[in-house]
Length: 526
Ligand SMILES: Cc1ncc(COP(=O)(O)O)c(C=O)c1O
Ligand SMILES: N[C@@H](CCOP(=O)(O)O)C(=O)O
Image 1 (tube, rainbow, N blue to C red):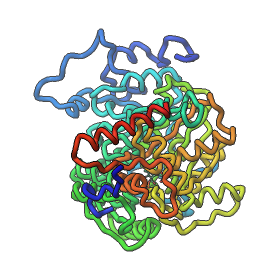
Image 2: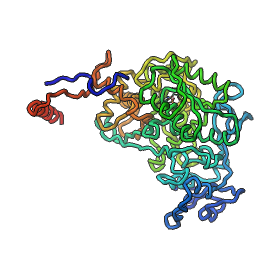
Image 3: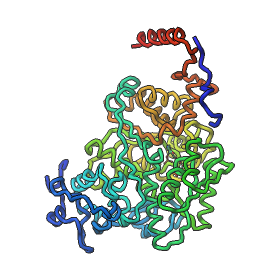
Image 4: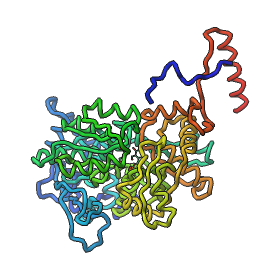
């Protein structure tokens, strides 16, 4: 039998459920609500859902595009949002307009985008569900986006004309039937494929919001000459794509030789100014913070709370995809730790605004080689200590000093959450097992699946618990890790599920021999 040798030929050497009133969308004036598309400037009403098929408008005029159409159908409402210090008490008076360029509170703490809940609460949960549901899968600008279909809860005051969107979101919630059954004895396991997206990661959800706001600020002649980020590869890809679409200069700081080739080529192709810096992600983050304090470059990392407004829509989307039923568990891989809070906030808003009656338990999963949150959790949330992050196949979460640590702790404490960790072998095995059932996931999703396997094995997650694992990036961005694994080329790793190709001579007899062997072995396994 021929043996496998490292893919050598083909690879480069680079590496109205219970409505307040049934059947009625609670509005001070239901007639205005249902039949009027154009609201007056002073109207207190949010934009109504698009017309039902019977009243559907005709195709827009041939010389009008979808952005023009949105301009013509412009609606007004009185929803608003502002920056406030994160987790400030009810007596804090500090706040900032979203049109200000500010990333930190006066005391140096994190900020949060606070929505006017009193205004949003004028409409009941059924109203919001119907509105959001009515927008799914359409091409109406900007609501065809999974993020902007929740515009009133994201950036309510931005003009649709200023929005920079690739119709991101609305990602597949995949029923992991075979993985759940075969490896975990579970029947209600789901993978939210946030990485099957415009630039191949969940970062698109936040970046459409941030770049749209920058677009608005530039139109207001605010001093923003470009947008910058530090990145482990996905934030930079999303930033450069959205900036390129809007014609805004982007600048990305990348830790040299620490991100995948597929990730590196993304900002290069999108004409970003790419700095490859001889440090790790935490070093790049420190530098971009210093630089954005000096130059009129807008900071695009999740330290900027605008990003999380977009990312939180993935949580709302999960509820929507379950017909507004709440899953028991949601497992999210964590690095800089903005996303775990974004999920919490999305679920929290749905509960607070009456769309659902509870929130799921959250699990944040970290690579054992970069696990400051895990250590903090295990210490009983005593003093937080950043760590020096070691190399991990889950390279996008190789972060030792996460900027959103306080947000993550808050999210986990308020969702009865858990933190888990995955060794390199565990995360690579989990990724390979998932791939063997038809997925093609990234190593970070392998980290989240490892957390699931551990919690399932310990009985904390039950066999019938409805569980969602958040897949954060596309597997195609991380093919080198899969190649190494399936080549059995990783030192000190058994690579138990490796499936190397078989080298075979180009003659009928040899091919028949290996096939017969394979088929008899495969049949024995069935
Ligand atoms: C693919 C991927 N998964 C997970 C994460 C973790 O997200 P967060 O930094 O918001 O914790 C990141 C970025 O850090 C990422 O790029
Ligand atoms: N994984 C991230 C790390 C930076 O996270 P951010 O959410 O703060 O931008 C990346 O892809 O760069």
